[in-house]
Length: 424
Ligand code: IZC
Ligand code: ZN
Image 1 (spheres, rainbow, N blue to C red):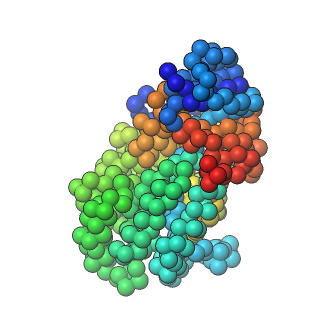
Image 2 (cartoon, rainbow, N blue to C red):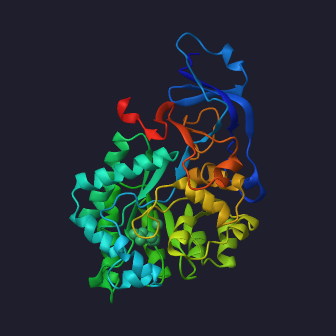
Image 3 (cartoon, rainbow, N blue to C red):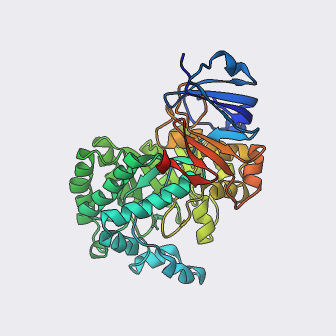
């Protein structure tokens, strides 16, 4: 057996054994940790895991050996909900928000998402690409190796396709893996404010088939919210999406308890995201139907809103994942480590629960559980070496970047907190 790389002298290695479903309840608080560990990698995949010097039996002259200097190694982090590709930024609305004007009110006045739609339409592919690449580099530097990326700043076919194509191009040229989601139902254009139906028909009859035909998105998502898409509209759009072969996600019960959690259970969505205002009944239905609650505490922090009730979700047996919601309006930050810290400080999750929520459960939230999300034989060698003695420390010492190094499919892509893949 030819081994390409061994990373030795790992102080604590967070491994994991995928059980065929996301972690729930007490399982979320458990991590499998090997001390004084090594990982062996071949063709970008993990082929052996062990402790001390046992790797000596499997190496040969070709094997590169790298020293983790006694640090903590975890699976590459997964950001399973972002609005990565967009034009502009919305700091012009910051003072308004700080003075108490609600996010949804700004949208109703034609700002918010609609102002990002304007900037995204005006931006060239090159501009969108270089802005999103900068963000993707930052995410990688914080230890994120896979990112879900949504469209939704076009609200018409050409710009939705432009956004998705930029995402596809990035995926080709950047070490971070992307998972693409069509979010044409992200806001109602002003001209359809009084009558949504013709816009929904354009989404369902024109945009969704074209995006599918071009192979630009795997998931379909809807912003189901008071003043945006109703429960009935969301159900119609997502049912059609399923018929066309999309997997489903919902922005559900973020601001108002509309029954988005219940709908995500009825439709057996892969994930239901936000859920700050979800009802207990809806959460119970999600648990019964294995729908992942994808919580976005960076948005609660940024909008000064209540946090989702993660403790109740975990008690009810709902699988929980965490992600950034990186976007120009309600979470302008690529820092998933800060989101993890908010998982503890805002959502009252334990450090172990948080790590599971951004690794194995996040892999389930984007249907990549067979490839990533845990360090086990056969999975991709997506690894983060943290300059931290243990998992608790990552969440406790907040506001800094703990990354020492990042490996993507066995290749060193971040060193000294800087993306270095261009030089490979
Ligand atoms: O640009 O405001 N919540 N969509 C739904 C967003 C946040 C993104 C944005
Ligand atoms: Zn979102």
